Amino acid sequence: MAQARTYAGGVDGNRSLERGIEILRAFRPGVDTLGNGEIAERTGLPRSTVSRLTRTLVNSGMLDEVRLERTYRLAASVISIGHAMRTGSPVLNAIGPMMRAESAKRRLNVGLATADRTMMVYLESIRYSPRAALRNAVAGQQVPMELTSLGRAYLAGIAAGERERLLKLFKRRSTAATKALLTDVRRSIAAVERDGYCAVSWQPAVLAVATPIVLDGLPVYALNMSLQNVDRSDALASEIGAYLNAFAAKCKEALAGR
Amino acid sequence: MAQARTYAGGVDGNRSLERGIEILRAFRPGVDTLGNGEIAERTGLPRSTVSRLTRTLVNSGMLDEVRLERTYRLAASVISIGHAMRTGSPVLNAIGPMMRAESAKRRLNVGLATADRTMMVYLESIRYSPRAALRNAVAGQQVPMELTSLGRAYLAGIAAGERERLLKLFKRRSTAATKALLTDVRRSIAAVERDGYCAVSWQPAVLAVATPIVLDGLPVYALNMSLQNVDRSDALASEIGAYLNAFAAKCKEALAGR
DNA sequence: TCCGCCATTTCCACTAAGTGGAATTAAGGG
DNA sequence: CCCTTAATTCCACTTAGTGGAAATGGCGGA
Image (tube, rainbow over all chains, first blue to last red; front, side, top):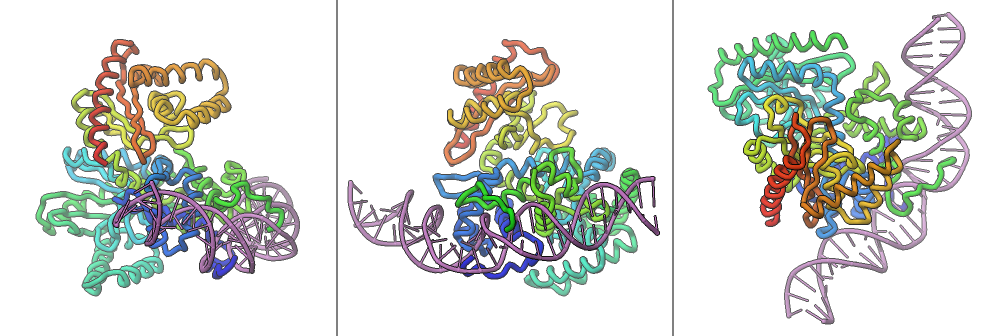
């Protein structure tokens, strides 16, 4: 393989597969089509390599080719695999219905998420508001780990080593106010350890409260409750926090027998 | 590569990537975890190869490892890529809101799907019934192409060569009643060509009517309308068919400017 | 309509990345 | 504690994969 520099993955790990997955990941939300050139730029892979791998992904049904524009888009296969993930998830199966009931009962939004690298990914998000409920399904939506209650609850739930690794990544990518941000993140983690939950107002007029769900043999999840159009107040946060703690306990109970 | 038999993909196509994708596909809806052995069985790949590829998929964040059981499950990444597919889809973006409005107006279910190999995959499915609306999101759900109105409308929309290729596959996999089934499929295709839509009652007491949406530079989609708890009658089918034709025309108009 | 430009794809020489059977290790059951 | 069963690592082998260079093919401008 002329000029093919040694693959860092070493004895294990398959370079081509890794690269192919990176190509799929290059299609971020909102991106419709990407050409091989653009993919090569985004992934840093040689153009000829991208050309071959995109062809393979088309053959495997993961990408659709737009011959006219010489571009590609994600194919329907990816949502069918996503659907398999959701229907297979024992956590979502067990507590999804409970989340719906709780959302109706408490009249607030209830969400379940886990991590994908440095982002939190919603497995489910039940909107109380009839308006919002009509909006597009948000399963799969990503929110930044370091800025959200979900992410900070997740950080509180994982092993210390992994947590520090992630905090270093935030430090590296954050443009400004890094010091203050990290302090705030650590404060949230401490809050989870103390109160069982943390409260964050990431978006204006939205109060969100989250708690980690740690189970053997499963990734760490985070469960949250949120309210729109409210002023952030400690009283409100602790009220919702109490609801959340109670609900999380019920969920863990339901999940214990598995 | 001892005993590595020639890769049929030829000059293009990357074998490892293809195999890795097949491993992801082995996780069908309802499957929670799979071990390397089970994956090897399902995919027909050598055990050692599966072992290496699953490790790569874990490193790439597509699979979560359950160390305790020596098994793997699909990771949250797959739904975030699925989400990217949905938010990127110009068709879903354009007609999703229209589908919601139409469902409310006509008081019936409205769905949008496209093909993944021999299955139809829902991009969106709006349930009119408030009960059903509460159920899990069905985006990503698969239904068999040859048995559903969606699938038959799709078949009517694609190029003849591809259609015949698919019909052959159905013939091969169907256990019995193949001849009658294929006749029925062709009848549906003829119906689409004649009336613009076809009506199928795949599931008992459900009447479904579908029509293809063919656009340049996009895969062929199928749009359907369905009603539960009804008797199949030609009168009802043609009433819904008329609604569907009108709605599909509106959709195509909305999509023309792109 | 034809020409020149730019992006994409194909070609090609090269070899390390990937392969699969065998050996080894680890897990689970009695 | 040992034995069985399955997953992982080892290893010799060589082809599948690589990336730069050349060829191809759209596309816009004249």
